[in-house]
Amino acid sequence: MTTYASPTTKPNRPNLVAVGTIVWLSSELMFFAALFAMYFTTRAVQGPGVWAESTGMLNIPFSATNTTVLVLSSVTCQYGVFAAERFQARRAGALWQLSKWGMREWFALTFLMGAFFIGGQVFEYAELVHEGLTISSSPYGSVFYLTTGFHGLHVTGGLIAFLILLIRVFRAQKFGHSQATTAIVVSYYWHFVDIVWIALFTAIYLIK
Image (tube, rainbow, N blue to C red; front, side, top):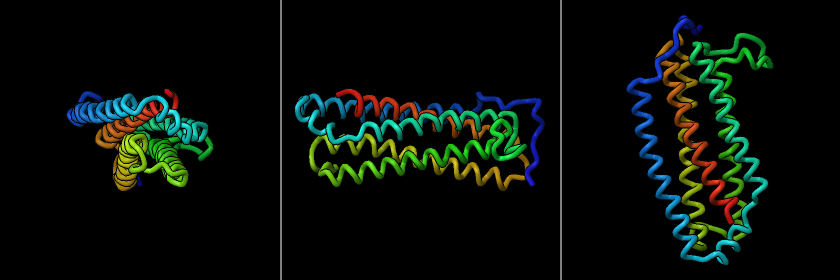
């Protein structure tokens, strides 16, 4: 059975792991900046007519719903961080008492919401391929699948991180600073991919 460290102190956020994660995310930001540059450059070269025809295939209401689920997952992730900061690994009450949930419950819900987003993205890809939009069908198809696909890979990486963290916490004899710090670092990454997707969704789906 997991035991808990004293809640009188909180994990220090400024540590080597957190700083290293922030530096790494900065490099990832440059990577996505390059993808944005590729997208807008291709758009400028192809012209508004070609772009308008291609973007007409996108199911914006469906993608907006999928985006909402991903954005809300950042909220559930942060609630998990709050629970980790008070060294609460699991719920202290009934399942329906959200105020008594621990890190495990909030992160498990975040994982499910992230998995829902990936499932929605796969469904959207299948629909677009059925309509004839593939990665090799046009320049728009190439930049669309590259930008959204690389982001999807990052979301999948976040889901794997959640799984690893949940397994480690489940197997740990004590929930303390190390586990709490890992939870905080994973949340940094998750918030990052959410923010990037908001920018991608705005650029690809909303800006015609």
